[in-house]
Length: 423
Image 1 (tube, rainbow, N blue to C red):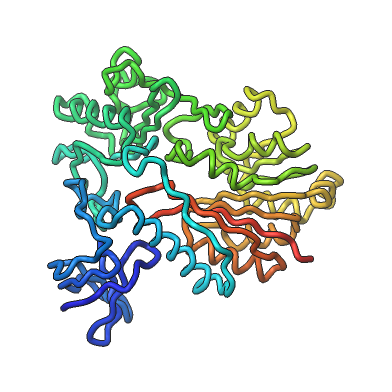
Image 2 (cartoon, rainbow, N blue to C red; image 1 turned 30 degrees about the horizontal axis):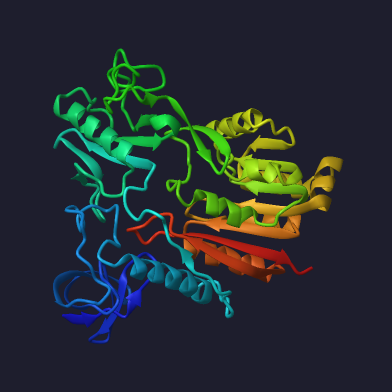
């Protein structure tokens, strides 16, 4: 079947129509003329794979990575960087209009990354001990694509990957380790953590079961004595302590601009941050507001947030380790003087939820709190649009949109929106 790609859809697939069918094509570029093969059908939509590029799009480039097409990590390498940025902007607009029912979308552009390659300061690698593979899942499968050189990893994380591959080949990387998380810190330090192990290996360091003694500063996979349990990251003048299991932005180059966009012009008496993690936005908020409350469901992340506030000398912020939806329900239903003061003085609410977005009870809780301003930081335009539709229906107006290419060579994009209260 021959098709012409019309545009790139949310999720990164190319849209085409042919023979009365709606067809979504992986790894396509706008304007490509392709011969495709239908791989599967779901409802009225056919999903296809490229068999031949009949006439390439003017936006198409040769992917530099030898694993492109097999590895599931990157899906935009076939497009020029400018085309990637334009596709991401259109994905955001499409979601806001189609899913969010927002007719008038404010003007915005996607801020490009200073480095489109070798930018990732966080990674998660999959380990297949039977086939001796270490890398990322192949696209659409649970099979491991064996990756020796990753084009988007920061150099020291690439060295870490190479060191782990040496351990895999000489059998000193435990076969019980199923995936490995790594994060780069200041002073060229790396924190790594294995996951999904069946049982600890005798002699493993505390907190790192299954490594067989691999995580020691005198015997680390990088060969630089750089591996530690925790690391510190200095972003925009603030220092954050975290480990490889903590969520943290993976693009240090753009993180300062992301923070500035999220807290721009924000100040006042009271701010609440939902899904605060280790405190990436909490510390800047605590310098702008008299009182800040951060809510985080993960116990370890909440502990890091408290530590980071303490090290910064910020005593005006409180971290609550509780499920976000449950905290909102309790605070909005409470008749206590503390709850009443929070609801009465809430100037600003920031939320940075996981890719799945904020569930219905979280949005309902936000509407009951009635903050004067809301900032929503999102890594998924579709769930962002879904939640914005509810917030706007609840009395808020979309004021500004900003977007940041935190994930070059992929369809993912970080979006920051600000809303103001209309009641």
